[in-house]
Length: 458
Image 1: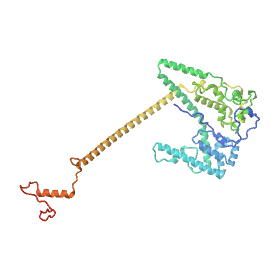
Image 2 (image 1 turned 60 degrees about the vertical axis):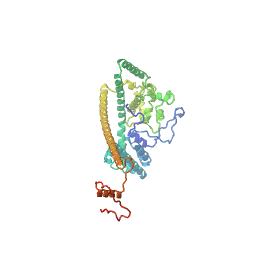
Image 3 (image 1 turned 120 degrees about the horizontal axis):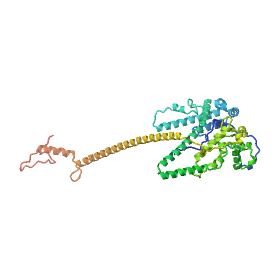
Image 4 (image 1 turned 45 degrees about the vertical axis):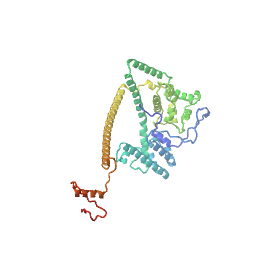
């Protein structure tokens, strides 16, 4: 089944990376009775945990942030830098002025990251039983560090890290949308394939059930336009527990700036849409798909960002938020169309997707047949070796039996003749020959004296 990661990764733009480097900005002072607000109060001085970016170099990114954050000079420069200076690499040059301790620690982090990447490359190459891996050449595929200098962290490394994070995270939402479309097409493909296995009566029953579930899912309360006054007032009343007649945009911003950094980031914005999503999706209902709910949340957040985020840095400042409340769309928004009211894919896209699936299945089938042939050949070679082994064992056993038979007598006793006796017997046979002795002739036997007996010369 098509698998996707949802809500375990929150895409953050390069600016969020920079924001994590900033010290806690002084928030606009707002008088508010916190006793009326539900939930735990913000603890001053508490460490703000940076959200997972979902990048394969996420840990390295966070470690670099933590180290740079300790340098006073760099923090001061960062406070006065604008987004374009950061993206252009101008801020990276300030790295030359940070303390020696910070530079040393950054060098260590880079060496560790290079070692990690080399280990991953080696593991990948070993899986293909490849030899002679050129790690330096393969490191070129990683664009978040300068592979030509694996020992020290330079301003170029910081520049590459910021640009790589910017590029990767800008494409993250698009990747999520593409994955969701594939997920929906796969669902429809599997549904149609299942219908083909049914008879006419069962098929009509399934089609009727499908249409009924679609109708049931679409029967939900009105969904407020994301970012509109009605939507925010609903959060103010139901989530914050405040009087809707006392709604104040500035106070609302302060309440939902959870980490108190002076911005509403993507994560904080998406949290505002939970009440709206609960009107449409319920995990207990068979007709409600939670994957679709997360796609709906993503669409809402993108819409609000497009409406409010003036400088397109994917962070909403108090100024931008207040400016959005002055627009006509804030007071009189258009109706919001949920996913069930939109066409996620066309029939042409579905056919193309199914063609791709068939090609993949065909390739997998060919690989499976090839593996089966290899398995059969290996089995044949194994059987042949086993037969040779058994034949060799039989030959060895026969030889042992033959050797044992030649050394034993009729009763199975071991035959043994001393060498001297063997020689004398041969000599006597030689003198006597094969002729029988004449009658009355007594063969002369050698006695201990041996002087009157026939001597046998060699």
